[in-house]
Image 1 (cartoon, rainbow, N blue to C red):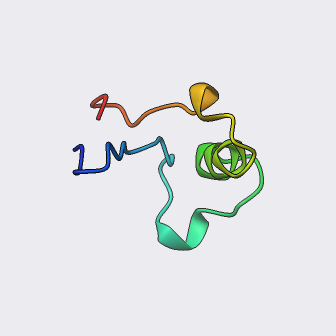
Image 2: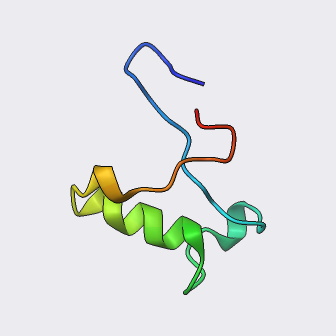
Length: 49
């Protein structure tokens, strides 16, 4: 789902909200890439939003 600011959902893996910072998860990888400004490397959610 894109919001008015062009937001895109990124892949988070199979865990829940409490698992976002678990080492080795897609969510931690994507959050790290976002923080580093490497947005082009972030993997999007399965539906491509």
